[in-house]
Image (tube, rainbow, N blue to C red; front, side, top):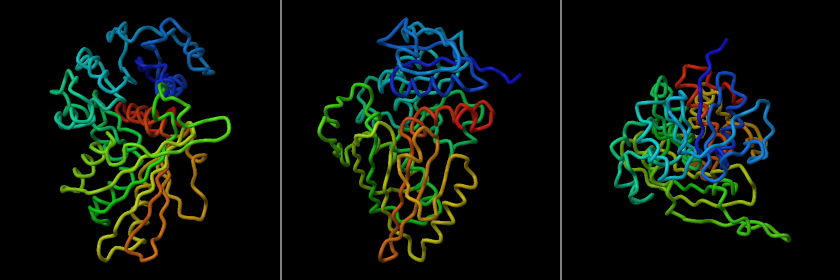
Length: 341
């Protein structure tokens, strides 16, 4: 019999929490013992989330009712500025996998600037592993404290970190144009912003001022070991789920598209959830929705001094819940793809 890890999910009725519940309910090594909710206690998760599950799960309870002594791992699918309140009670007592931004940043001053000053445990910021699984496998193994990256950073960092690490692209004039399904804005997002009976809307927001910029910058500069200058323009689409980042980069002198292709081919060969598309197939949301994949495609620029990269993920899976489970698997010494295929 495979070992069973007793798992709790706080914030289980949000978009990401429901995605986590759906994945973990089918995970062969997981038993869900607690489902927390701030607004829907004493409710069947199937009813709250319109889920069809293969097994019966506990009714939801208030998040604050979770007793860490009853589980091995707690997933915190809670808002930014809220997770840290729970972490201070659970730290060093249970494995914590946090899907908020509360422990992604290394610098408390940067956190305050982007998320406010209500962090109760800034002393623990550097005690969490950044859970970008493809690049931090060794750090994740046997680790009890994991901060799962944001969805936009995941779609941007997966293609750019290896290129910066190998000095294949210049560390300035990088342009990132990202588009996300509206589930990335959470359940409080007003659908009137994006859908009307007669048409659909589409707009950019927080251009060069999005809170994920500091996270992207932090991780790129760790790899590059110096400043990385980029523009970031996020958009909301009328799709429910999916994310596409189109990235424009200047090649280093002497570097050709072939070098980038080889880098991405190597990245794919070493990682179960990376797919590098080299043919003429169209890459679109349908290819990544409800998967934990990151699909990469490369395009020439007319003067050959630049490249255009398209990076596709499902913002609820690889951008959140799926990546959290991927990190969980690695940390537990399990097959990385368990429960995610």
